[in-house]
Amino acid sequence: MVSQKIELSTPAGVMKPIGPYSHIAKVGDFISISATAGVDPATGALAGPDIASQTEQILDAFDLMLKSVGSDLAHIVHINVFLKDMADFAEMNATYAKKLGEHRPARTAIAVTGLPKPGALITMNLTAVTAS
Image 1 (spheres, rainbow, N blue to C red):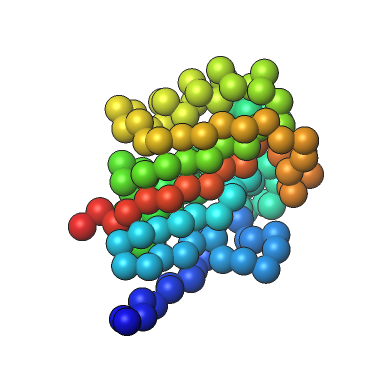
Image 2: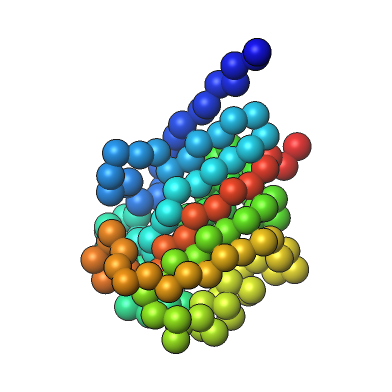
C-alpha cells in the first residue's frame, strides 16, 4: 500500500485558526478547508455585522487559501454552509452566487444554534480539487 502525504497549511492573509487545526489539508489533488468565519484577518474582528459581508469575507478567504495550494473557486466540489439563522439564507445566496459566478458546486446548508466565533452569523467549509 502506498502512503500519501497529507500537507497541512494556513496561509498568510487569512484569520488564524481559533483551535488546534490547520485551515487546509491537501492529499494529492484533494483539498479540504476547515470551517471559516467571516473574519477580517488584519483585525481579527468580523468583516461586518451582516450576513452579506461575512459571506463575502469567507469566500475571499477560500479564494486565497485555494490559490495557495494550486486551486481556485472554480474547482470547489462541495461547500457546507452553517447559518445561525435560516432567515439569512436568501441574502447569503445572493452574495454566494455573485462571488462564485456560474460555478455551482454541490452544497449543504444547515441552521445551527451556535458557532465558535462570537457574533458570527455563518461559517463554511469545503472540499475542492487542484486546478491542474
